[in-house]
Image (tube, rainbow, N blue to C red; front, side, top):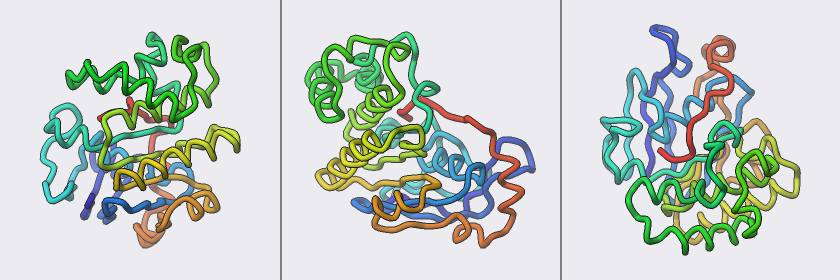
Length: 239
């Protein structure tokens, strides 16, 4: 289980975006986090994926309390998460061809021998042909690049997926295709899913449980948080 307890986090001293937030995601469970833009959802997603250190509170991953964050976290915790962000062009290295982009996490953990097979498998899963794999981000559409970012998030077979507005920039057909890929992976692997978004219809169809932001905050400070979360914060799709 992924457990966040009494999490307070922000980007400036004494100006928290999140205050005393509790949330949990069971392995195999799909949880939707619904809320308006700027309310703090993305910050919570980053904390959950070990990409942002909270000011206080606890994050526990399958019984192990997290003490270090980002690249200082133990490898077994970093690789437990696959992350897909809203804006693929901010989370993809523009110098890399899509095949190398998908392979990034494998290369980072030294599992280079798996690269050809896993890239081929996942490219087929997300609908990217060999011609597209040879292109760089500026040579493909947002939807094609987001497919590559999803493949990258899955390449290490994570125990948890965090999808932060993954489909917000996509058309309906690409949205349906990527949601299907995530759901197939979740059912086959038993991974937990935290899907963050502002589209109630999509989240309620996609997830077994949907939590509204106001349920986490008790409506306290919601307007203030909307002013505090920086726009466009993102990070590479692997912790």
